[in-house]
Image 1 (tube, one colour):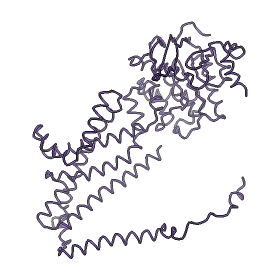
Image 2 (tube, chains in turn yellow, green):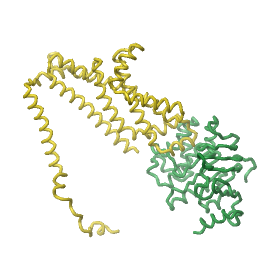
Image 3 (cartoon, rainbow over the protein chains, first blue to last red):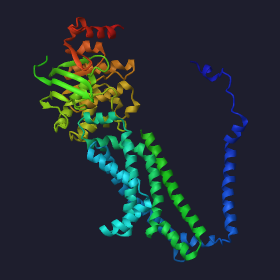
Image 4 (tube, chains in turn brown, yellow):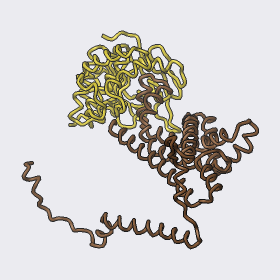
Length: 280
Length: 248
């Protein structure tokens, strides 16, 4: 095939979609539409707040984010809360992953007992609301086993998310073709070696996207521990409001802080995903 | 050339998938250094039989002894045995997240606990043997099917296996790549390796086989040396099969 042939288009061009479709599909119209809707909602809430006589005091918010005095720059109490939230989430996530891996491996073990225990655990956790689970951990298991509110919240979050994480891990492990097991078995690898060197490294790329979702979910659901007054972002927000009565400003601020954190997480992981794609 | 000590001996082996009788009363023995080619129509149990040899499938009754080790489900010695048995699959089953060299060294390093440098040296030697030393640092997906299958053969050889099992090694390959794999297998046969090969490549079978086995519907129908197998098969069914595939 010569280059002249490939460059020359002989067929008639295809018909364009109808004009109305083209207008709605264009970027400019979408952006304009987006801003109209968003500003409509923002204006609506502002007017609503105005009509109930709400006294906006945004100028008082920055002091909770940071202070800048002669002694220097200092992060505010909201960042202390954020730090606690991240610490709580990280601890819970690590525990949840370990527990989730155990549950997933039990379920995949092929042992009747293992599968039964795993399914029992999953059904139990998945069918109890997170808030009730937290109360169980704090008011029931806490006194029995003698752990404090912080431990109760970490354990509760870890157990709740381990059920979800174990399903993600199981799906990722099952997504690796059966032939990989056979290849590894045929060169004499044990089950543990096969998991460690062959199966798990390959399942990471299947697990990363849903795991990101799970981390974001965990950071958000960690807010629930504010009901047992564990010091974290949401609790700090409640405390500030009880001191200042600025519920609108503070809740907006807290929401934005959560959003920024989870967005950073998502962006970071999508970068990781691309990297794994390139490697394979 | 072959000595008379059976390295694989199968007696009255039966295998069921649920109620389906996949292998029926299989009796066969393979001597050290013998090259056996198993052929037969699809679904005749050829692959199942060869997969029973290294325990990827478990037989339900009968006796299967390989290199003095009895094969049965849950046997503690299976891992040692698998190191003696190289297996080459139709779909290669290379590890896509590892380079060619890592594919070859991971078995010796993790299973046989050989040092990295020694494992790499052996790996490069076998890559040389299968004529692709220059591909060592690539990933399997960057190679052609024929090259991937040769890597798979090298991976088994790196375990210093005594017996090589081939499960339709050329069936998933483009026609123009079949010969490069068969050439490597012929060279391997020339070294005196014990080989059990499920294949439809009758030219290859004629060239290397000491014994031809024909299977149908889970049973061994015919076992004979290639000279009589190709010219004067005993069973009618085997004659029909050969007519079908040798027509072209």
